[in-house]
Image (cartoon, rainbow, N blue to C red):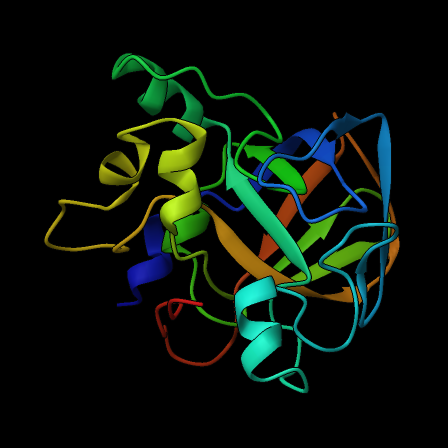
Amino acid sequence: MSQAHDLSLEGKVAAVAADPGHHFSKPVKDRIVLVAGHGVEGDAHGGPFVRHRYLARRRPRLPNLRQVHLIPAELFAFLGEAGFEVAAGDMGENITTIGLDLERMPLGTLIELGPSAVVELTGLRTPCVLIDRFQRGLKRLVLSSEETGPPFKSGVLGEVRAGGPVVAGDSARVRLPSSSFRPLPAL
């Protein structure tokens, strides 16, 4: 039996965010536009080649597997219980979802957002030192202590397969890959 059998396949978009500059947090927007093969229109991480500052300095021609960053809103509640105040866009995500256990989705999962956009999941967002610069002690909480499941709780990354507008309240529908379950790698 597949490890994906208990995953919720229907959720919602809680918020969207974008920033043309390379800042840790992104301001929440009324709407973003996803562009196939590029990412979020007007966002610093968009483009066909990696835009993550550390990776781009070392290997600028790497394919951009980090075009879109998604985080489940449920993470904010978990962090809130530990005394942290984290809201949509604060951890640099472009799309905040409700009802999807994103970090447990298999590699190659397609997330259909709104009327036409589709993001293919490529990996787990690896938490970096900037998380603790944002709020001291936060990184420790996003490193999972579970023996099974994902090693991080800081969202997922993906590539845009089909473009279109995305707004808060849009549906977020999951299409699991037909191949066997492969966990998302750290990116």
